[in-house]
Length: 264
Length: 276
Ligand SMILES: Nc1ncnc2c1ncn2[C@@H]1O[C@H](COP(=O)(O)OP(=O)(O)OP(=O)(O)O)[C@@H](O)[C@H]1O
Ligand SMILES: [Mg+2]
Image (cartoon, rainbow over all chains, first blue to last red; front, side):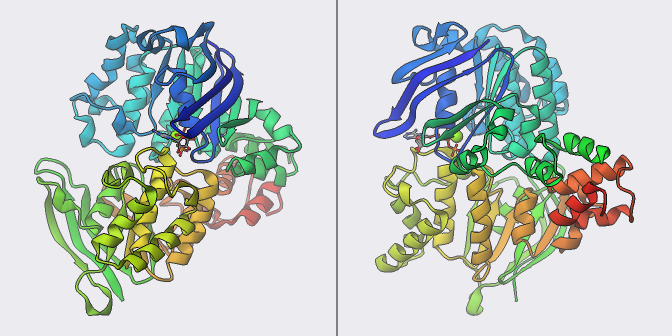
């Protein structure tokens, strides 16, 4: 399902958070939203599943403007996992937490088992989420949202607080959902880990879209580096390494660098 | 001089839970920065809670061994400030502006108005949150809240600053300058930082402690602590990942594998270019 923002603005009282955002993510794309702290990333996501409605402009999920739908109807189209997992978790056990969203919207639960396996949550199903480490709580929160099997999935900072082991699990989940044709929209500061999974990027600065499009296009632009700097983004380290190795094509992860080295 | 000393310290969150920390012996000296890394569940957060004296708030906790604290100038307790992994819970809910929020802990330790004012200003400048000064601390983005809690912690000028994953919600630019801020702070205080970000570790750590399942598996100077036996518990710098992978595939023929982990960026690029 495609996602489209048309001239979207939003303010919390007198604090402007998004200004005149226009962008579109095609169906089945994996999108990274990046930008400095306070640039409007979480606000953008909250608008995607209708927790917030635009003050100006229109957000479309598929062909439907979010304005015209109730929150529960939107929940069938887009699931959102929060920046702070503790804002999301409340069930007595991991098993109940993972099922909650599915039952709530009457979803097909066929993703539940694969998610439990990908995240290695099997041994924790009976535990109270609050007895788990922060990283596991985050996996439970992400797992519960993903299990709702919505065509669009929004993740706010999914790698924050994860160690390398759980990050790999998360990578597994993204690959799995991508194969199912989901549109996955991820807010992150962790470009070094997530860029290899991404198709598109949206870069925000002070509530404005600085770039929206294929990730390669950002790196091919003459002013790409400058745009990233202005948005509080450091040039990703694998891109830096590929440039240092004299590659004319930018690399996003270690595999591509190894391929480059193999050709030398 | 030692400021904090764990001596054969073990802890479990309840009688039937496996130990979260096992037989930990660890010293943190004045003006020393110690980074603690390890996989999730290895005990980093428990170590931070214990160091901050916050384990007492868990009623069912069982522990063994001791933690000794030595303050400056012969005082018994070092002044300690902490930013928890769940920093959201540290916002006081008592103050209506960011400046007042940051002033709260200074007022709590009885500093004068002028001194509080001076320290809050300094912290705001260090963490670069002047633009948030008059905002309500409850109405901020995640990263903005993390910065406010961090500023509150450094404003009291502690002898020991404990940070549990301080970079988790920060944008890359902030992450980069926070490394400089911490290096500067180290001149006046000891730092105990639970963090897996290898770039921060390389920048600020005098020592790297690696935990696995509650035990210390390595404790030493940062340059040598990242090695073949600790690599599997750590996020490695991107260039190290590339060189290690290339070596596995036989693309780099050279010395014993252990030295691959001591690489800096330049030597890694050289190796990947094929003339290392
Ligand atoms: N509940 C709120 N009330 C008022 N203002 C808010 C609220 N939440 C966020 N803001 C403000 O709206 C703007 C955008 O915030 P948002 O949370 O979308 O940023 P973000 O890009 O997600 O930042 P971070 O990387 O820190 O999570 C910021 O200026 C922020 O201070
Ligand atoms: Mg956010």
